[in-house]
Image 1 (cartoon, helix red, strand yellow):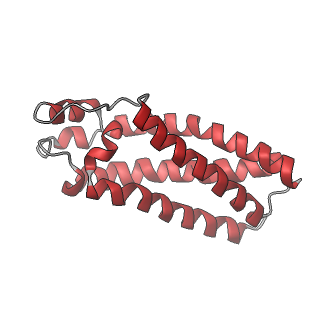
Image 2 (cartoon, one colour):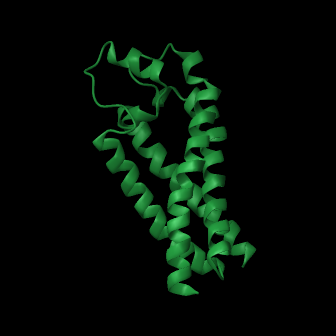
Image 3 (spheres, one colour):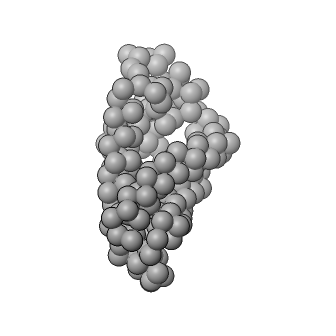
Length: 165
């Protein structure tokens, strides 16, 4: 496998992920309400109409499902470009990129940007500094993200091995 291509793919995928998350988040933080800690959601709903905000709602599953499908297709192309030669190399590459982005999301986007950017705070929750700096919440969500990430990476690696090896 070509490590230069892998590093370049990881950087590009990280930039794309950042744009996919940050543009909607800055434009309308409520769009990502399901990703906010529950105490922030509850404070928001004290002064705003309650909307579905749990992970297993139709809206959230559609958003996350479409994003996962897009990532699955993207990963197939990334595996080919990087020169994955079998199921295990494809899995290592795809899950490695997934994990890097998951940690970047937790340690940089959530712990630093999300915690400190006033533009992404839900209206009426601007005063909740402690809740926005809840590192444990985001770390646990990151662990769930790593577990969930195995699914598209395993499926993508299987498809890749079936089609390309």
